[in-house]
Length: 253
Length: 292
Image (tube, rainbow over all chains, first blue to last red; front, side, top):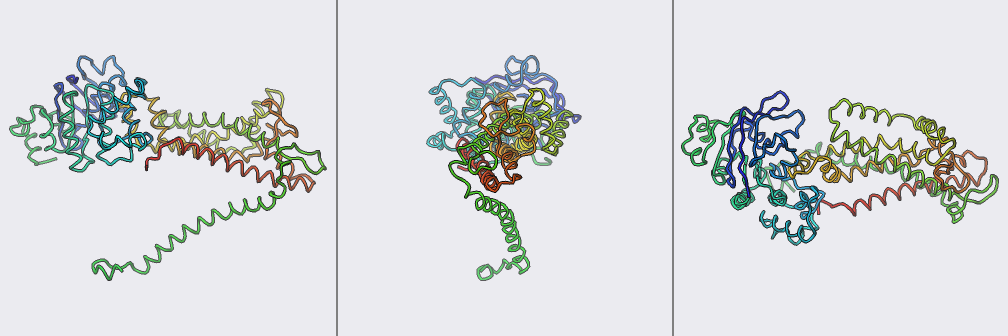
C-alpha cells in the first residue's frame, strides 16, 4: 500500500545555487500528484529530494523535513533504506544493458540480497511484468534478450516493472514519457491509473494535458518555489495565483 | 541516377565525390599499413622458427652449450608461471585503482595524485622496475625467483589497467548508476554489479593490452626471474622465461641456439595471441550482447 508524503521547509542547493526555497507539500497516499513548471524551476530537484537521489550529485545538499509515512528520511535513516521504499522511474529509459529482461526486473531483489527462492522470484518477476503491461510482449524471450534490445516504450515499462518488483510504497516518475511516442505514452498513463491503487505516485511532467489526465493533485513550481498546490481541476480551471494562470494558459514557459 | 529520378536533388560535385572516395581509400591504406608489419613479423618468425619447432623443443630442457638439440619446455612453463603471477598482482590492483579513480576519487586531491602517479609509472623504463623488484624481493628473499619476476611484470601492468578501467567506467552512463541507487542498491554493489559489469568488455581489453605488453618483456626479468636451464616449479627459485631464453640464445655463438631463439619467439607470439583470444572468447560467452 502507498503512504502519504509530508514535505516541510525543504531547501535544496547545487553547490552555491539555491534550487529549492522552503517547499511545503502534503501528498496523499494512493493518489497521483503531478509536478509542473517551466524548465529549470526545480521540479526534478524536488522529487529527487523525496528519495534522497539529489545528494548523489557532488556538492548537492538539502535541508528540511520529508516524511514518508511516519519516517523522516533526512533524520536517522540511510539513503539506501529510503530508496527501497521510494522507487523511481527516470526521464530516459535506463534498463541495465548487461542484463536480460528477466534479470532487469529481478535486479532490485538480487542486488539488495533479498532475492527469494527461484520459483518465488519467477512469480515476482511475472507479477511485475504483468503489472507494467509488458508480460505478453516479453514472456517468451525475457531470459535471452537484453533489456536494451527492447523498444523505447517497452524499455520504460521494463523500468516501471523493475521499480515495482521491489514493492516500494511511493513511486516517483521524472518525466517518464518525454522520450516516448504518443502510443507508448498512452500505455504508461494507463499504467499510472492502474498502479496508483497500490502506490503513491508523484510525477514530474512538462505536458500539462498529461498532468490533467493522470493526477488528482497538481503542484506548480516556478524558480525553485512551490507557487500553488491544489486539486488538479482547480489548478487548471480556477487557479488562485496569477502566475499559475499565466503558465497554464501558455503565456510563458 | 539521382538526377534522372529527382530533379530537386543536385548530384554530388566531382570534388565531393573525390574527397569521399579519397577518405575511404586513405582509411583502407592505413589498415594495410597496420597489418603489413604485423604480418611481416609473424611471417618472418614462421619462416625462421617453424623449422626448428619439434616435439623436443616443446618437451625438453636446453641442451648443454655447443650440443645440438634440447628445447625450451622449462622456459615456456616458466613464462606461463611468471605471467600468471604478474596477472594475479596487476589485474586486481589495476582494476581496483581504476574503480577508485572513476567512482570515488573524482576530482579529489588524492585521486589526482593516484592518476598522476599511475601515468608516471607507465613511463618508467622497464629495467628500472626490474631493479625495484630486485631490491624489494630478490634482496629480501636472498635469491632470484619467479616471484620477483612476477612482481616486476605485475607492477608494469598496473598503470595500463588502472587508466583503461577508469576510462571504461566513465563511459558507463550515469543514469545506470542512478537506476541502481533508485532500487535501494548500495554504492559498492552498484559499482560491482552494474558499472563494472556494463564495462566488462572494455576493462578486459585493458587487461589484455597490459598482458600482451609485459609478456615479451626481457629487461625486468634479467635480475628478478634470472633464468634457469632446468625445470623449476618453486616460486621462490630462479625460473626460466621465454624472453630471457630468446635473449640468451640470440646472443650466443651457436647456430642451433639461434634457430631455437627464432622458434622461441614464434612460440611467445603464439602464446600471447592464444591467451588473448581465449580470454576474449570466455568473456563474450559470459556476457550478454545488448544488440541481440
